Image (cartoon, rainbow over all chains, first blue to last red; front, side, top):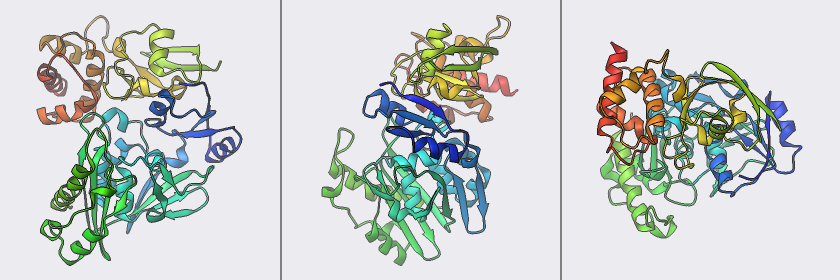
Length: 264
Length: 155
């Protein structure tokens, strides 16, 4: 890892000030992606500003109609939260399938979505649940937030503070995990809302996306049969040593049908 | 160089580190606690698992400075008064190791999962071990050891 300077932020305001002052500062939340990336010398920030322990980012609040989770809440805490398990069981289950227990003890919601890895799990929940990303300056709908591979709508010195998830009637997430990393080779999050079904696909393409044909079909009939003849074009899929584009396209249909079977 | 202070195995420690010093290197090189191993160095194998404030984490994927002010436990801190921790004893009893390289991480993960989950069954143990890789045992005796320790500690 190249040299850098570690700074621990005491408050969100302090983090903002520090973020505005270095040559090329980056935020450090749980560090489960940025540290491996820096070890490989694929990233070399001048400063890491640690916001992992900021109390302002640790809240979970469940209100009628939605669940708001602080950006610094760790995956393990989302997975084990009785309130979240009761309000949006599909979201708690998704958090419990990220990485492994040790990664879940460190990794955070905000860190995951700010990075927008094409194979990460949370972006699928954000899109499928129609979440709102709350930053220190504004609110961004999930549909506008994830803009491309490792790209988001965040400004350079903007900090995610929380994510607000509307409570669906039912939701479920099914992924085909990479056996080593547990990242999604393909993952599909499906949620039935009062105003329709949303289907979000991660792992398959350069960026998480909504599968609109499946949404239309499931709005007519919420059953695996309704989408059994639908396919996504392999030309839009990622291809790497873990899975070819054709295999990923196939898995999108399989994971979507399995997700319907576990809606709760 | 910045100074970092924490409690390791019940003792207050502090040392100067570079910002890029990983917690595992701080433990092994500054404190000479070489029971925590570096296996893959890519967050996958779990040989470096320790407890920070009671939770199992991979010390190869954490900076020493992130652990400032925390309470750290390594494999060296499990035994008390020369007596093995029940999980260590169960690994010995059930032959839960062969070469032993993964064992410190396996045991630290096991202690953490027993703390979090009552009445562990085999399926849960195998799922919870997804962050620990063993290339010798085929896992069977590791799972048996954790199950035995879980039952003993729960009873």
